[in-house]
Figure 1 (cartoon, rainbow, N blue to C red):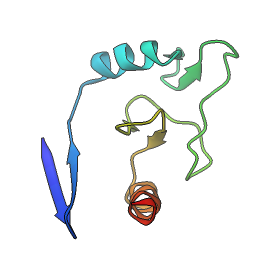
Figure 2 (figure 1 turned 120 degrees about the horizontal axis):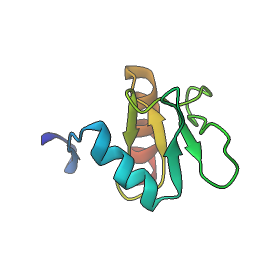
Figure 3 (figure 1 turned 60 degrees about the vertical axis):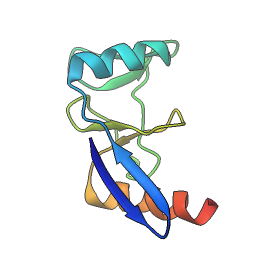
Length: 89
């Protein structure tokens, strides 16, 4: 687990492997297609990262705690998410 604390706000990361991600995604009604992209089980459409506006691959994904937000894990998308997260607190 990695932790970052800023202004009394604690942010923790738990690293999970792709098999564990698939189990979590299954609970959230998502799956992974043959190319490794996360899909909505009902529509079979690629899940689009709300920050990068690109399809999310299982290898580069982060499932953010306390939500059903699934993003591509890049410095830009994480920065955008945490900026919004901290603003709301």
